[in-house]
Length: 244
Image 1 (cartoon, rainbow, N blue to C red):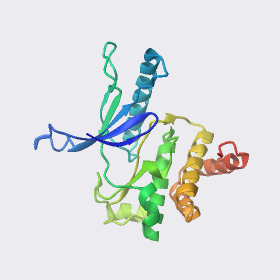
Image 2 (tube, one colour):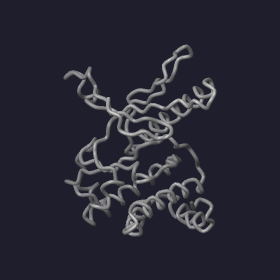
Image 3 (spheres, helix red, strand yellow):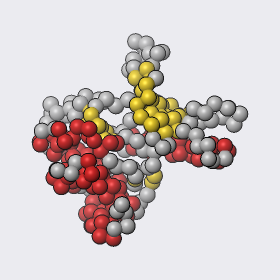
């Protein structure tokens, strides 16, 4: 296993499937992600177990809900939570598929302009689907967005290409990752704050072109409640409550 990243709440590993065989190739990926929630020594062990169990189950349920809604997120392969008498520490895990590609935080600034705009429009469409299903990401930054060139994509028909504005030969797709802070909410306010976090991330990481990027995002973020959410976003910004 290779440690890819470590945050305050979890460690992310890239693991190889040593049991993979030709017979199981279709359903058993060669590589997958293991997300392990880190124990907190300052919490009582029983409380720590409860919190990590709840958060592991919540993230797994939200990812499953997103997959069912045909949103581009990693598929859940397995989820484990600690048994009552289990003394090991790394049992609060989600095994999920590995999505190869570029993290926008690292590559967006270097893309050709048209690719930048296309990526942000696609991001807008994915977040629109997320919010239409009342899923709040809560950490919507370009570090949690992957542009994947060939992962799980099928050729689209000409009719769909005309409808969506995508090229039939253009197989790149936006994937959303890291749903550790996510939750379910029908509130316009919560969805507006999600967009505010994205806007702040663009201003910080992609400051030279953030206005152009966010405008392209909004062009893709079209759904029943998008107008109300974007109007609430302006109120959130004026209020200054979420500015740091």
